[in-house]
Length: 229
Image (cartoon, rainbow, N blue to C red; front, side, top):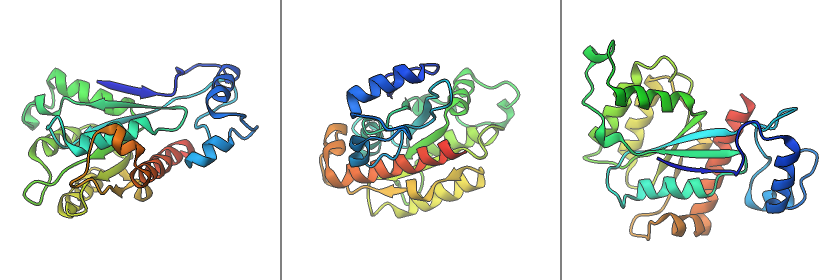
């Protein structure tokens, strides 16, 4: 599990949050904006209530089991670009999940209980999935099948990242499956990164002007949707 976040926990006071934010982002206006944030494309520090800061938690899910997968690296890059007030938890246990079996629904394996709990705790999902044989990889579809029976999945906000312009069939299939599961796909958070044939480590992706801009805008879209809910 990998966690990236703005350095505050839920319950941090507004004054502490503002003081630390100013050290990083410069002067913060009464409407929770700053010139530095504007230059990065972020409109506001999300989820600031009257008394406390509420962190937004995103769960990232890669459809590839390869350690050097561009999809996984894109998600790690996104975690480096999240705005203040947002934490990203990466789920990396898809390859260890049992084969989907609806007969186990009444006595779920521990790994499935954990998966569903992680999804429930997340305010939104970041998904990056490759295309194999013009479809969704079997291990990722297996994970989605286990989530079909979760009563808390419908309405979950989802951002979809695609790392190859040629991988259109899997994206279309993935959208169809997620729509069938009643996920809320955020159109402005669905992007295609041009990583085919390029260096795909998180730092390189996050520092690339075009890719980082697309990732920031996608993150802003899903965070904005969650904040407005």
